[in-house]
Amino acid sequence: MLKIDLHTHSVASGHALNTVFEMAHFASQNGVTHLGITDHGSAMKGASHAEYFWVSDQLTELYGVKIFLGIEANILNDNGEIDLTVDLLKKQKVVSAGLHEFTPYKSVGVEYNTLSILKAMENPYIKIITHPYRPEFPVDIEALFLKSIETNTVLELNNSLFARQESLNELIDVYSKMISLCKLNNRKIIIGSDAHVATKIGNDMNIQSVSNELGLTPEIILNNFPQELESFLSN
Image: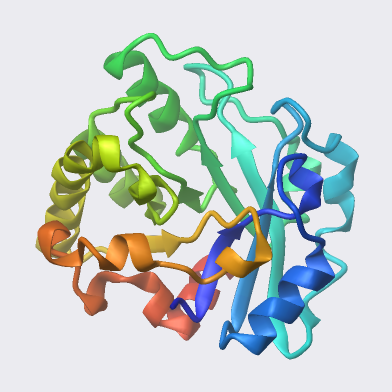
């Protein structure tokens, strides 16, 4: 169970079930100390309009849980453009970004997908790349890792992604390489639950079940270092 979970979704994402207050209450009852609520950007079908993100700087704590309201932005093209303007990005407590279905983005292969994320990583507001590799959006994970050093961006291990038994071997192969690169270069990863229901907040069971195969060890998990993580988000 994660004490810090910076990848969750509220009803504002359009396909999640709980409000911010319900999510914070569940977190408070289950040992979660830091909760990031990163609703999808407006380019995703069913998501909130961009103006929703004006209020992201107005709530910092609920039920004793530190709250980080932000966005999981949608990468839109190979220029790395995302679906939130700079004036609104400045208001977010955490900005992550990734490739998603139900958006204008179309995957046309490894090279295009990799370039799209590489360009997005040059955006100084983006701190986390969510589920950097998915079977639907294959990428060169080493290229993304090297770019993450340059841009001081963190790559995510996504718990929901590892629920997919049909592609589990493929995911282990790719993400074990990412973890190995992190260890060789003294870098950290972040784990996100990607919860769309409050009861999934802090859940990392899918990742823990394959942690040995991944080579995952506590010292490279940014979630384990709250002060370092808070400093990372504020810089």
